[in-house]
Image 1 (cartoon, rainbow, N blue to C red):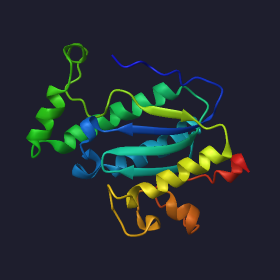
Image 2: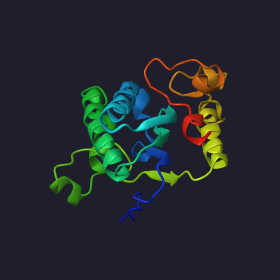
Image 3: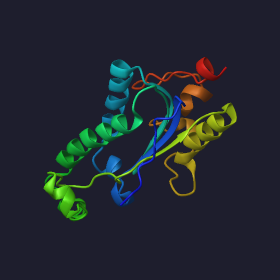
Image 4: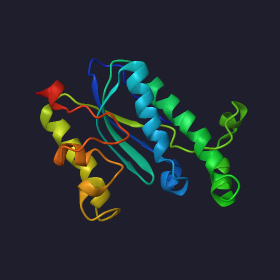
Length: 186
């Protein structure tokens, strides 16, 4: 059983990663990038959680978020609501993937009503205490799409599911209200 990390410490900027089950590229297969965008807009409007940086890779999401509420609740709610829609988008043409996601559920999860395991059960959240760490993670996020593993584009600023063009080209993202980290970290 995974150990839960206490995300209720005094830090209010986080580097967050959550991953699709077994690294399956569900965001690409189901064309579900919009689910992440909708969730980022919701948490900005409802909870004033500010996005400082992000990237949506085919099977995981990296975020730099400024927030002051229960991180566990925010991320678990996001994963739950995205999971329902991803499963819906998989029906009926991706039965092999659906079977994999269904077979991944434990008996305990089934008793609670879970039918598919779309995301890994935990998520990673690292508290950001220094500007150096923040910049390291922002560079990592922006470099992810052009890493040897992914090669999703030629130039990292061309990847549409990232905040790279916001920072490097001063171009607003059409779907995410990105707040420049310098407003908080000067």
